[in-house]
Image 1 (cartoon, rainbow, N blue to C red):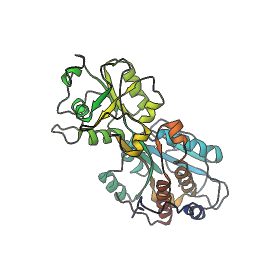
Image 2 (tube, rainbow, N blue to C red):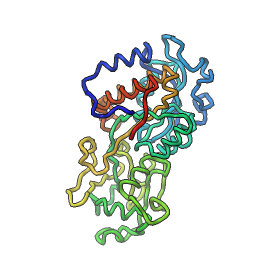
Image 3 (cartoon, rainbow, N blue to C red):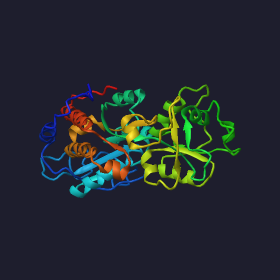
Image 4 (tube, rainbow, N blue to C red):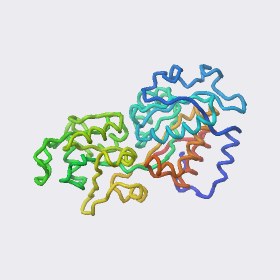
Length: 359
């Protein structure tokens, strides 16, 4: 059973016990990152290296220097965090290689993690029941680590001075396949008689999954969202698309907005009869912002048990998740002490082979 998020927040001594379990050694690694789909562009064949392809037998063999490969697939939302943490880890351990890709949460699970080709899969929403079952059918127990929080942001063009906020009801109307209005004025007569130009994440994205479930919900059509939008796994391309058309409309992770605040305009959200709430880290942390959501990474328990350098990296990842740069430089709410301790407890259980995922 996964540890509860209500565990004792003062059990900092777990960090030391984990170091003993995982073995002594510097908490670091090196290698390359990639935007590709994990086709071996890191110089390997995309495998986990346990067949000796990294020059070893897949373990660290008691060596003082960490070595081996780590394959991380999944979410483009979580990607900036993983990119920075792997960069830091790489500076310290040049003999550990990374293949880090943006496949989307669902795409990463489907095409890389569930087949057993990655050690970790980043996700901007919880693992789904069918994904969990397919993992277990393949002998994989996914280990969940809750790393940060996001304020999913709805954006329009900077010239769209006719709108500063939008209700969740109107947001659903715009994006639902059951309604699919063509013009802004079809939704609100005060808005322009101009066609929508829509941008959003691709269907392989966890952001897409979260948005369709949270905003749109059940539909009568045979698809979860209208199909006439520009979908991509590159969140910065969503911002660029909205920037290029006065009547464009899209949604993207807060980090991609806050790091380019002059390129597009963020809308405040109205839920029920509430006052408009603008996207912010404070709103995501408190839950006051309607589209606040958790961010995760999932580890392959079998590979965590087998690969000491993976154990060390995940411990490093967890301990970095509460650092200020997660908010200041990337744009997400960092983990709190309780989350760090829960994640370390999950890692400890995974190393011992005692972890079992529970939603």
